[in-house]
Image 1 (cartoon, rainbow, N blue to C red):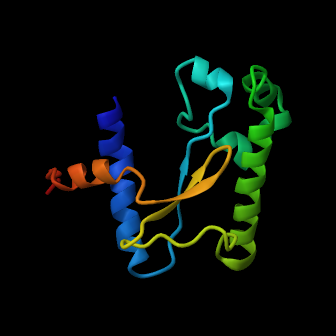
Image 2: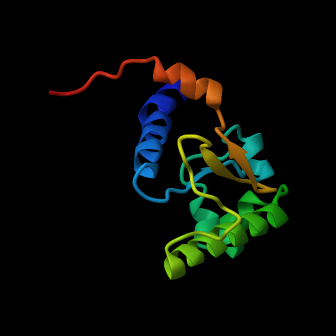
Length: 139
């Protein structure tokens, strides 16, 4: 499953970020935050779980339910991080200064979690392994 997700989602994202960053400022993030209930369910930071903090859903019944086993403060911190950066994008065309642009040389990625942090070229070994895989094209 993970290899399929890498092939369909992650690898193309890395390729697009690298290409796009050659022409204009590009910003990369990876959403890793998962409240305890999502971890216990074996889901982790699953697809679309980032929509909860993006839209401030921590105080909704669903937001309260997924943080009932722990993670309420973390969710609030992640919500603030997301919304502050998105508002900065809307106002200025760039996120907060604490989120540097992605370049092929450094591949700086904002890891949104509790705590949020910056990583240079996260999953580098995986990226290098995928670079050797030829992707068939439709013609």
